Image (cartoon, rainbow, N blue to C red; front, side, top):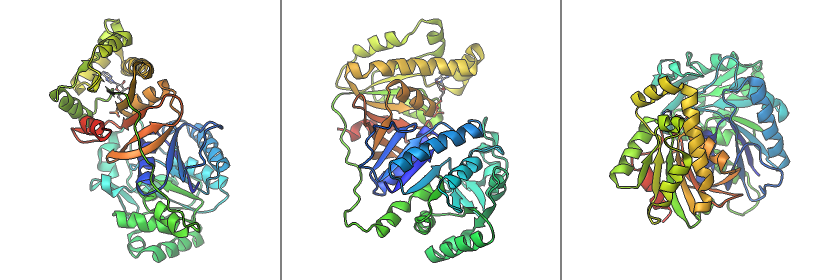
Length: 421
Ligand code: ADP
């Protein structure tokens, strides 16, 4: 295994796994630390999805180290710590503390931190992170409920989180290419820095950074900076065997869409599916709370639908509707009621012959994947940026598309279904 990755959330892990698979590495994603008996021998890369982004730093460190140990035991030559391209964190962590712990684990003294993902509008210039051209501290991330980002200078942000000395490799070095980046790494090391923020404004920058970093035992960043690694590994590969991307084959069976996301992209996708005439059942959180609607009733509805077309079950609602529900039931309670119902429905699906599942929503995906006892995924073709088809590697044989709420074009559900025909 060339690369062992630890991601701090589920849809971020899928995003990284897709990036590596697309660039030619046979990639497996696991939900949590892989079971000891899971066969990882055919993988060039393994991505472990944790849920550690907003945990107390010590917990995030412990989970990440457990992942690192499992990856090393499975033969990983390099480690990659993946976090969000908006550098979601607080002064307490968890990017700094986890990077520090993993650097010590690999017994190395230098790594980089590069969240840039130009294809999704995230660029880093002179150490400052921009979101679609707006400095991070002026973007909507300034109001994030859990990790408000009020400083766009990542050298300062990261330095507040870690005892490691933080340096900067800026645009001029990156633009000058591979040799200049390597020289800049040496310069920063000589200046006593153990971790450097690296500027990147384009995919060409990310590929050059990947090539320059391929020897590092630990890299940290968004999925973007992993883009150059597969090519770098191929260059250093002694064997002549080409690294092929994962072959993808979906199991035969019925298709279903479960949407628990209320994000605007998902609302548009649900609307497009309804307009296309897909049989659909809407779940209202108040009905679920009162028992007027149950998972069993939804399953009875599902059984009555034609087998040759996908079905849609959704709780997707407008912000106004969500607010009304939340004021009645409480924010966390409303979310939990919906997640639990979708998870209960999901649990019954394999026995009903449903093998192709499209799930909309990050938290929703986590709840559904847990209920299905899926603990490892092979990465298949890309449906839209950041969202691949995946196939379960143990338990029920399922094809799963796990979509973060705001990803995907309006026809995502239909497009995803059609890809499997
Ligand atoms: P996204 O990726 O769009 O953020 P998530 O699945 O992560 O989607 O989060 C959506 C949250 O909203 C989940 O906890 C879900 O259970 C909850 N939810 C879904 N539908 C409703 C609704 N109609 N009313 C209140 N909460 C809802």
